[in-house]
Amino acid sequence: AQRVTQPEKLLSVFKGAPVELKCNYSYSGSPELFWYVQYSRQRLQLLLRHISRESIKGFTADLNKGETSFHLKKPFAQEEDSAMYYCALKEGAQKLVFGQGTRLTINP
Amino acid sequence: NAGVTQTPKFRILKIGQSMTLQCTQDMNHNYMYWYRQDPGMGLKLIYYSVGAGITDKGEVPNGYNVSRSTTEDFPLRLELAAPSQTSVYFCASSPGTGETDTQYFGPGTRLTVL
Image (cartoon, rainbow over all chains, first blue to last red; front, side):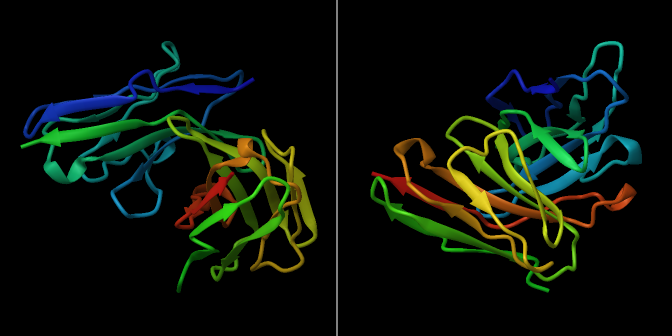
């Protein structure tokens, strides 16, 4: 069965420091992976997808098939990055399997 | 566009009661989903639909039923509420194809069963 693991439930860094949110997956085929984010009092929304190879709000994520990882990175954290982050794997007919989520707190 | 709307926002049920969680989207999306999120856990798929008249089970369907009579609406029915169904429920929709497979989420319904 496909699985997504986010090993850190909580992550706290200082403003300006680098951020890395870890995501590991298990999948037998070619994975399609996403990062979703939920800011305080807002809806869960897509942050980025690996096939787009894009940088959104300074965040990037590289798919590493050898390590089965899709870690989310940002070189310099900002206070507005504080949120709940979910890694997700596409399964079958547009279904998503979500990790447990990581709550990121950026300290001033 | 309102996007995905869910009602109610909060609800407290007694064990054995039934209720329907409403979900509506105005984006003409083919795909719709129901997830539940327990404290400290990720979202788990309950049911999904690929179009009007078509529904299928997700990872945790027991205790729930759905219907999809229109493109816009995807209600989730709890027939005999149990404490294990205390959770936050999210509805989502998606165009469902290729690069446009982003899921758009509703604000959630917080359900407590006592």
